[in-house]
Image 1 (cartoon, rainbow, N blue to C red):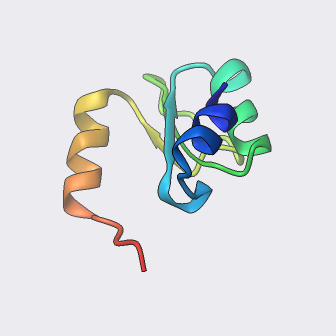
Image 2 (image 1 turned 120 degrees about the vertical axis):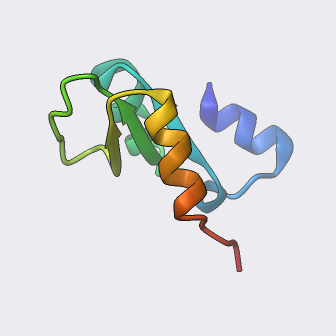
Length: 72
């Protein structure tokens, strides 16, 4: 579904951060589609497929605000 949305809106994969709370359903699928990923994982356990691992949305917001990524 995420890939179809990108094609409809002509968004580049490099401009997307896919956020999900399920490693299997969200993160692995998004990674297979070539997207950067942020895994909301309260345990904080890392996984190679997740580019970012945070315990909650507040921590993700803080991380994104403190480390803005600019498109070129």
